[in-house]
Image (cartoon, rainbow, N blue to C red):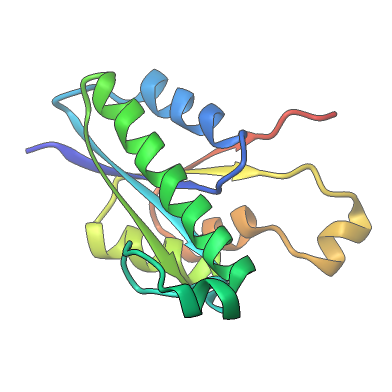
Amino acid sequence: MPHPVLIAIDASPAASALLDLARRYCHPGEHTLHVLLAIDSSFAVHDQPTAYTELEQEEYPAACDEQQLAEHAVIRAVRSLRDAGFDSLGCMVADQPVEAIVAKARELECELVIIGHRHLSRLGRLLDPSISAKVIDRLDVPVLVGAAKRH
């Protein structure tokens, strides 16, 4: 039975580096790759991908755009992993990233979590603590942290 691996992405171009890590360290047939993207609940219009009504687009244009961007990022990631020969599933959830990642990893009984890392300054870490550090502290499985490229 394939071992589940969770890949926590965002909708940024940095997500491709996490998919590259998964392709490097995981093997088709041995691992099932689960892609997760968590968005702030204030930007979630629907619980599942569906068409937006005209009223929703007028009332919540930013939320519709954010959710649509997230949904497309998950679809692209899953397609890329499937093209590489992996069994892959994906979902977008409206929740805080740490809560969503920890809950999904436990639900799937993952053997590995792959997550990104932003290079924050000390002040940045103080104001916006590291998601990856919080995930590492709360899970009992290995967490592979892919560093974002510095600009």
